[in-house]
Length: 430
Image (cartoon, rainbow, N blue to C red; front, side, top):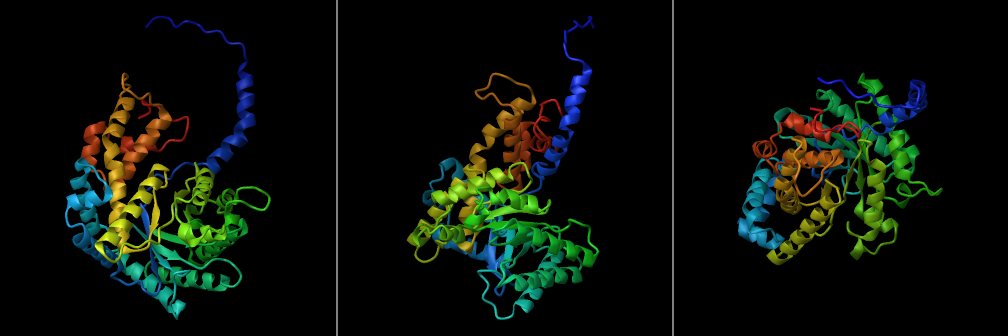
């Protein structure tokens, strides 16, 4: 090798060392507050089932009812595609994948509800039964990948009830063999960070009482009040809530109807695409970015029931809202009826399949240092492309073989591109 040319510098090494020393606290704070996405699977939806109605067959029943709705109102790919406006190219693959998903894994995330949806007469017994059934499902392989409860909130009139129900449910799981990996807890109607701090304290005490590793139990924060978005002093409360969770927050879930009502939106306009909803979710999204806390959209209360015409209308609405959310990077939402599941998966599968080939080609070119394409990608783009493909794999929209074939990348390399924090993404860092 030839002799390298000397380059001129003007600053002493002590300057760089001094700047690094002054920024060390900032480096530590960045690492603590913004660790990045955890890289684990995010469910595409959360299914909501009242605690008194939850049973051992709930997940399979939802899948069977969804399949029945397809058989009755869209018995083939062409009819389903016509309702939703799917292209001829997507019609068969999306329809076939939807049916296969409903047979194999109809629900990705199940929340047993002990808050607004609960109408039972004995919450103690229903909470204990929920724990037993969840534990049994995890043991026999019939559980959803994620399962848990939504307790009541921490407002004064229901606080004791919320604490007791959570204690009964978690204690029941421990008695049945331990906490499952996919356990998810949802704290609703949070208005002050202090309520999040109280939840952290409650979980710390449970972990101590049961000899669990500190930090074992996380939880979601449901955003349903105006105060959770904007505090009295003008700050974004939701950002302070994430901090108050001390690393335990796993998600922020938008509550369509409570939040809309809180702002005085008329019932007919309480939808997830209302400007008030867009504002709230945008604040949630910015507050959560980089923290590892994920954002979930809400639900629609327009149910696909009745005549075929009414079902089709509800399907088109749900499909459109889901596609709109996905384009805005809200990769999860809430479903309230088995008839919503076909269009949830149709929207998700179409979203990933229609952009799959372009995303694969762009990431492949970036990884191979190829130039000459019509898009100039950079590290942040590569991260987004890899994340897109991995989410498509997680939900079943894409198959590992076709992703590897078109990208030339193994799963490990895909995860490499999707995972590093800013400053660490280069094609050669493999």
